[in-house]
Image (cartoon, rainbow, N blue to C red; front, side, top):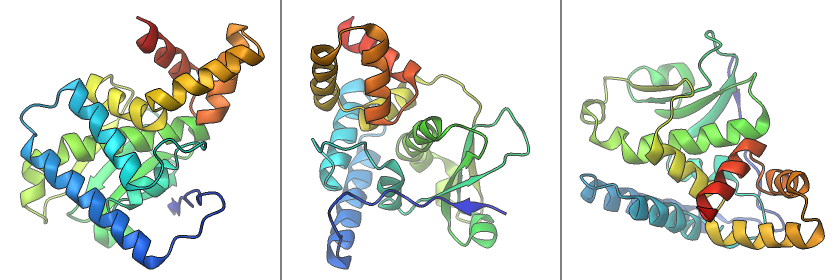
Length: 215
């Protein structure tokens, strides 16, 4: 039986129903704007979209790991974790069709229970990218009786990877924390470990992020 993920509560803040509704509306506006620009998903647009989402949900330049499970909720997507029948599938996005009969939600992201917690955070961000950048133009969206499925099997997609990186490790926050780590202990192993724990992402994603920002 699938287990619903309890998303992280923002530290020291209790959200009211009115705030929640406002966040949902802002996220829906971002989604509508993306639909208009779907023909030309440039890197700069993807970076700006991630930034806009963080601002809309109140997590822009906050000194906490980005609560990605909470963010996908604002787009009406429910995150779950369960043991996958196929070990090579790390996560899935299901929308419409029989999804609501099985999970009582029409949009869900499932992550493999066997994945590490940090890797699952990336999977949720990556599958949100699929929803934002791909699903809305797919034929499955116009026919709600037809289920839209995206299974992640570790395939590399530049746009999805870029979005996940930008929303989990925003540039300004990353540079700031990188400098803090270097000042404390400039050994590479310490810096990578510090950033991995701060942003709650796998260490090799931190290494990739450092490479992106220095080359």
